[in-house]
Length: 384
Ligand code: URA
Image (cartoon, rainbow, N blue to C red; front, side):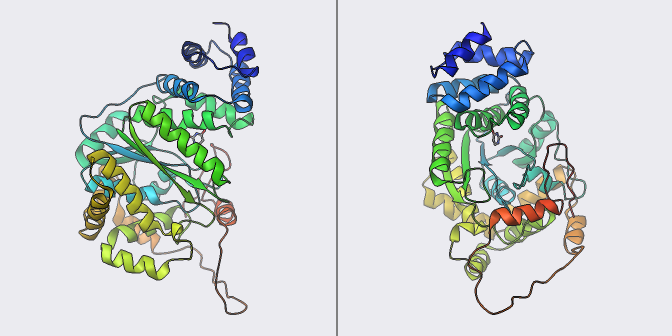
């Protein structure tokens, strides 16, 4: 294969063949194709796009660049494109496990204003969010849920390509984003994939049109790879829930997991804003029910009812506690830390009125400046 011929072909807007895409990615992974040719290909894809078949081939080629896991029992996972205050995974994954569907979740770290589930979980003293793949598989078997960062054995081609995209202005491309997200999720092996595509000021996708296009691309790609899949496009104009920052978000999640469903309903109605899509518990129930309904092949209403029951009887919280213990975390110590904010600052309104909007992007930037996130992958988080 002559890489330059394929670059010419894509630059002229033609579709690449399945074998051409496979060989290009294999060549890039092995180092035979240098970074400058891969960067040029990424830019050509950004400008000329890829059809659905090419996107599926790119996804498959990237998945096959590393190890893939298989499970002997029903599994599901949820992926969020990321937002401010987005702690939904901390609630959804144990809730789904409590419903009898195992959740092997290889999760990410935060970048820019969007937080990462692994960073949040690492605020629990002792929690190991960097398990080996063998330990990850063991925790999923023993507990039914594990959340840990992706290891370098999973989709090495994506790791290399993402680093190039980050510095060559080629992140914003639906085929490239789809292949990047989906290759990792397919390698993880979950049978059902549900996507939360965030849309708004605090999200990657600023317009509804782009968010819907990405949602369709992810769902079509997952189905083409033989998985059950669905997506919801949800608002990220305001932060999700009532807390932002790593420790605060784990504490808020524990609070939601610890309430019975009736109390959850009452609390969420008390606090509900005009835009109910920012209400975390209702969104959690919706996502968890989708995952359970698709995996168990039961009606959505029945799955919603099951989720409410598993919140009410404490089994979702118990799953979270078991997962934390299995990964070395100490929730008692966490609860003591979380109860003592280092600084408190009260903002007094100048006159009475209603808060009608909270800008997710601005809150995300403040959290980032306070050390809750990182500007570059090598930056360190300040958990408190
Ligand atoms: N998240 C990913 O994993 N990859 C992308 O390309 C964008 C967001």
